[in-house]
Image 1 (cartoon, rainbow, N blue to C red):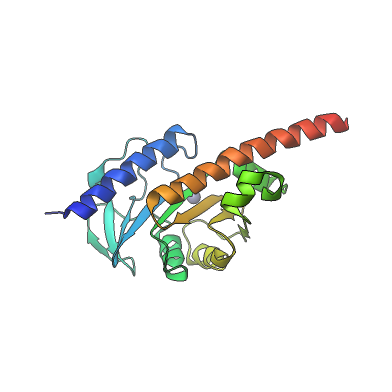
Image 2: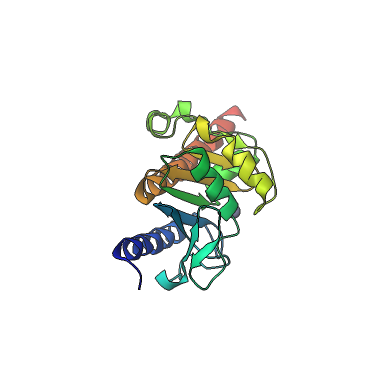
Amino acid sequence: MKDNTIINHNREIVTVCRQLYHKGLLAGADGNVSVKVGDKIITTPSGAHKGFMQEDDLVVTDLTGRIVEGNGTPSSELAMHLAIYEADPECGAVVHTHAPNALALSVAGTGFDTGRLAEAEMLLGEVPEAPYAPPGTEELARSVASCVDRGPVIMLQKHGAVSRGRNLMEAFCLMECLEHNARILLMVEILENRRAF
Ligand SMILES: [Zn+2]
């Protein structure tokens, strides 16, 4: 039988995944979410649609990624999550999405200049970009881990974004903040370019 702590976290993960899906931060089986509980990690399973995922679909692993509970396969980005938890002992939750506006700025090479927006600068600080590595690889995990000490939100080159927090709500809010401010910066970019012609 599952203990109440795990059940509560499972409920929260499912709620957050549905929010991420409905806010358009990920599509289909994109993205992954995890929460650290003591020496265990609760993670979304590989291949699950985050808008329809159920609590029973979640997988529990130890800090090395070994499955200790659940029938599915852990997220294909589990190595990245584990590397973040290792690099930041204060981290209690990790959210990875393909936030479209933030990713568009990143792919266009415009970057994410938080200095242009007061709240973004205050909440996000610097948003570093981890050099490209193929999704689901140890190489990507190392690339992201090397940026952890620069800020709580990291862009993944050509791929998406990852946020972390002391708890899931904090990590979710940072991801939401990234995408909301990226949308504003994208509109600023369009208006400024229009003025230039
Ligand atoms: Zn991804």
